[in-house]
Amino acid sequence: MVHTGAWNDIISLPLGPRRGKPRESGLTMIIDKGLGIQETKDLLETSGEYIDLLKLGFGTSAFYSQKLLQEKINIAHQYHVDIFPGGTFLEVAFWQGKIKAFFDRAKQLGFTLVEVSDGTINLSEKERKYIIELALDRGFKVLTEVGKKDGKVRVSIMNLLEQAQKDLEWGAWKVIMEGRESGKGIGLYDKDGKVMEDKLEQFINKFSSIDNIIWEAPLKNQQLEFITRFGVEVNLGNIPSNEVLALESLRTGLRGDTLNLVISYHDNNEGLEVPPVLSKLIAAWSLR
Image (cartoon, rainbow, N blue to C red; front, side):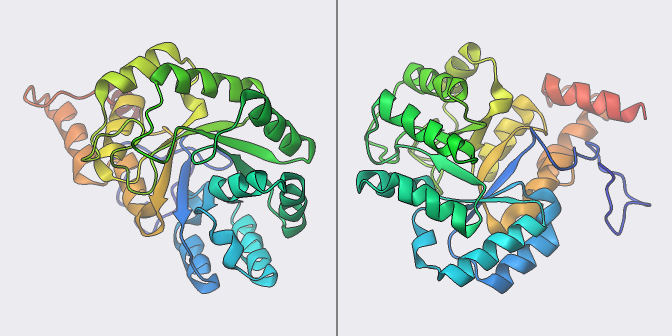
């Protein structure tokens, strides 16, 4: 991707430019909790190049008029951003016995992507597979999400792993790892929002398709953890809409946390360990 910023003839990105759209990895998914039309336009005009997925969080889709929602969807598509209703909204539709009507209306409105989850309700394996296949049959690209939204409901890493693998086998494009908008006391995160290393290691040691996972990581420390562990082209989700460029700065070495790693690599600072995945990237970029 050619970096087209106003400073690109003077300043080079310390970790190099990222892949352009359409991306299969390095995805950034933002959570939209009620942006108006002008706010959506402003966001995409400023940051659309760096946004791949825009989730209308929870059931917020229910509160837009049809005209307004279609306009919002059209704007996102103009910037080559996949927009989709939150998984909780689909769960309500299934719970009420309206899943087919839900997909028909989503298609009518112009959505091309849907999220299948059971973060609040419980789906049997047969029901989950049925919903995924129903969406695929209607021409939707499908995201799924694994994990529960209630932090008191514990789901084993092995169960998350098995469900993610099945979802991909059934035709899901990517699988979202639950982290909610808080990023605390849920999924792979403890009550303070720190990544539980043992659980993450257990997952990645048995799951070979990390590029097919979108890690919900609303907090900077979580984003930094995944970038340093998996590289700048890791898929990250539930990014607040006003922090897209902050994340892109972190991905490219224009934020102190990752810039420090680049400087340490070049200075051979033994006091700061540079993760292997970033060392390889820095070395390759330095040779250009």
